[in-house]
Image (cartoon, rainbow, N blue to C red; front, side):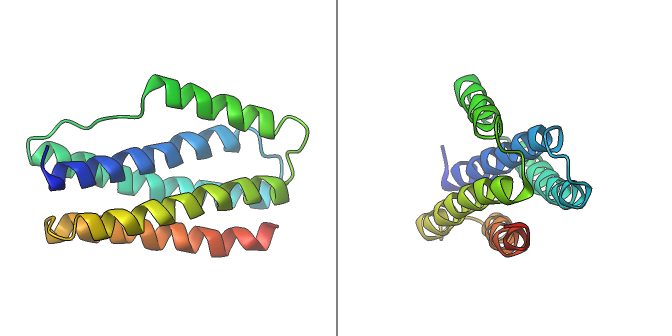
Length: 142
């Protein structure tokens, strides 16, 4: 698989995890202000995810989705971590941890795939900036 396809699939999977996680959390969160913030995050993850999928398909690559095992594992972990605490503070903390992991992976992939097409690296950079902004925005809910 080429560096372009690998980087695009990373972006696709990372943003898909964001979409899936935020969808699940919107159903759990009770605070309307926080829910509004999550909807905003969801829209951005969906936009990045759709762009990555389009770029993959337009370049003749198939998107490699998140494995069923990882989806189930994440679903169960979110349910367990929110079973006794559904507060915006607790959920924000969970999301900040996830976004920090996303930032680390994004920086590593930008360095690893420096030779990828400019448009693809730009999309990775957009995802990185989005994750960094998420962290700052979520701090308000801690």
